[in-house]
Length: 343
Image (cartoon, rainbow, N blue to C red):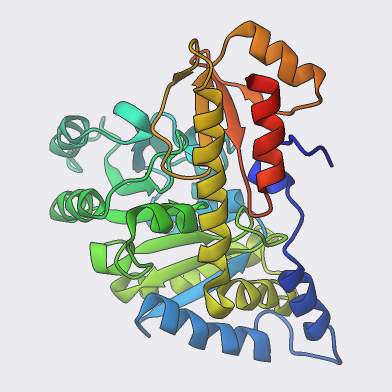
């Protein structure tokens, strides 16, 4: 693997603790479809992490599956989901939410830094009319933390937006594929950023943080009534893995002693260092605040060519910038190598 691989946090290997946990789970027989000891242990661990026992959960191997399955339980075919125009569910999931919901529409909202603007949200909420047959009324508000721009919704904004959505009769979904990075940046707890803020359904991702493939759909409070429907949709769509103990084992390893947050903290720190290094060149322009493990920067073409010739991997972005993503194992050596190429 290239030392200068900034392509994605999913390009990183699994953390050794995850592999060890899977090996330990691979002992003898175990009940299928989540009825195993590892899943039972995970429920207790999630209760501690989330500071509540009022939840149900389902395990998936991909973020797209978790988002699409979750949203399909709250958005009917004749309804809509409010989300940012740059949200992952809108631009990176090949219509999966619409497919899983049987035709539910995504209503795309604007806002700076990948976050829905309050005026745009209030306008969308104010236009909902379930009695008007020509309308596609919204049923869900979907937020993403971290956003696709690498920024973190502050806790008070999540709480405020959830309250506005609830007043309009909507459910609230949180895409937390990089939730750990957002929690590290904001200092919020998993409980504070989810059910305590008014979130009904959290898709908590651990794959980008250091697992192999581990995403957890969590339904809180009254939303738990959707759990039988979630299970049925998971089965129908082929997302009911028989040997679910191996996904649960990954989660147990990541939550052990707060490993998921420690790994996210390293990724966040390295991203800030990468941004600082890139900004040593006078022509570098950061396009987004660096809240997590993603850096979006416009670069001098000489720097771009120099990095590419050295084997660096990073992606151009639609706004004319380049995206650099750090991960749990990005080390100081990577930052130093980058600095030698830029300066």
